[in-house]
Structure formats: C-alpha cells, structure tokens
Figure 1 (cartoon, rainbow, N blue to C red):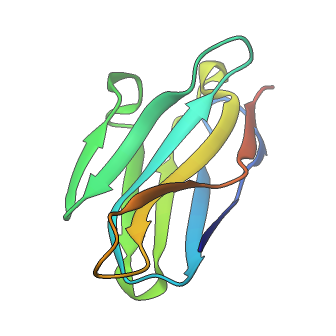
Figure 2 (figure 1 turned 180 degrees about the vertical axis):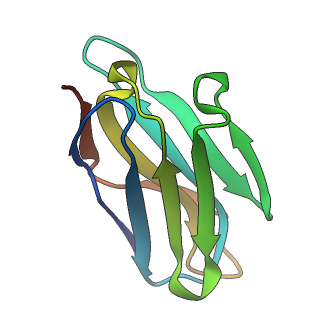
Figure 3 (figure 1 turned 45 degrees about the vertical axis):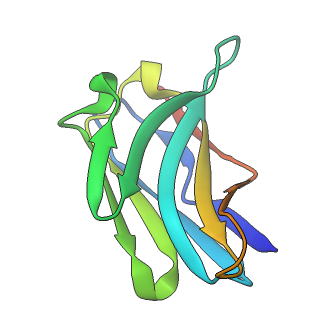
Length: 120
C-alpha cells in the first residue's frame, strides 16, 4: 500500500504565495506520475499541474504563476503557488501513480486534500 499526505495549505492574501508538499510513503517500487488537482465548492475536481518522467504540464489558469517540482529521493512533489488569486481557493489534492511491485500495474493513490483559501 502507498500512503499520500499533503501539507502546506492555509489562508493567504491575494497576490501572496504558498508552497504545498505531498509525500508518498509505504511499499513503493516505482512512481510514474505525481500531480496536483483542486476542487472548489460546487465545481468538479480539475488538474492543476502534473510531472511525468521529468516533464511538466499545467492548467492554463495557473501557467506562469505555479511551479511543480519533485524530489525523487524523498518521493515528494511540491507546488509553489505565486500571485495567488481568490479563484485559486479550493481543496488541493495530490495524486501519485505508483506500484509496489515490478509485477503489478501502477495504481493511483490520492491524499486527503489540503485547503487553500485566498482572501483579504
């Protein structure tokens, strides 16, 4: 089993910054993808940023403001969020696609989410 835990959310003023962290632990053989998603009240969960084999992809709404990075040695992915806007307010979730064995297909594991609120 793989456990995923996010941290770093909180309340920030518009224009401010936050850095989220997501650590995967447990029985990990390899990690294929790590990504951040968010869900605002009354809206569907949406992709924010993803890192796959060293490449990154971002939602148009966060390009130029957010940066995803990872530390393979720590099985951790980060999301640096700058120039935050009220519309960035949401619960942010981390997804890790990983396998615990060479013989098993990778599965998606989700964290419990961390609240980010952008408000003055």
